[in-house]
Image (cartoon, rainbow, N blue to C red; front, side, top):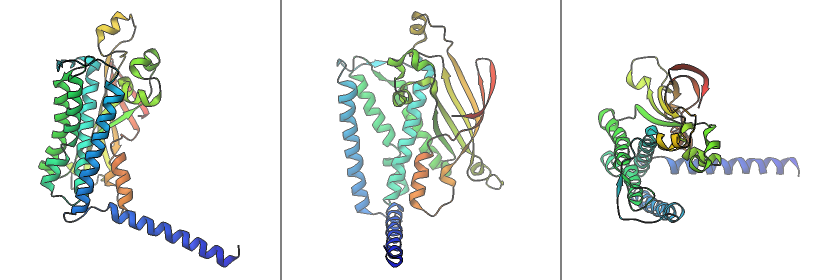
Length: 302
């Protein structure tokens, strides 16, 4: 291949990438006014995704267990409330995504809060109803309350400050407890990510600059307060005692810094979308842990 052909081939390749990125960037840019085609596509996509997810959940999760009459349970003491924090996190993040999606289609702020931010609460409550008809589980009012708190945290901040000054974030590390109870806590990393509450930490990540507008705090720096628990092989302490385990169940409290990825400046709407997605994950930082009557410093905690 001669030099001119190489040059024009490279030029064409770069131009194609630039054109594709330009089109993608234009597509991801939120509409200033109501875009009915985007709104219609969004509603169809969300309805389809929710429908497929619920059908798949019913087949993969509930089909192997006996059905029952609708019933409720009180599981507020199980898993040291870590599952409740999971509901709060999921409801908040799904609501945030729902509102952002409606903002992309140009829907008014009021409708973003009414229809978008309630996506998490509606979806998770539907799953809770499924639990109510399963003999293995049951409808938990504690879970519904946690779902409501997650949605309220999002909506309340939008009404009070018109921005999210405090976010709920998630981090995870593998633990030794999954090896002791793989059926309950998961065998693979993917299963443990969802099931092993010992390795999960939920964070309230507060943006310092948003609370102190005149300060010199960088807009991307957050202070984070975390909660976790350890020593659990089953949901109930009584069951762990029946198994004659030597594990001590205890709460964990954390103090750390974090990064607000959404406050990183960029003109690329593609990059903004990526940063928004990953903003649900706590960035590893030096962390102070208070637990089991001791104080531990972690150089990097995740």
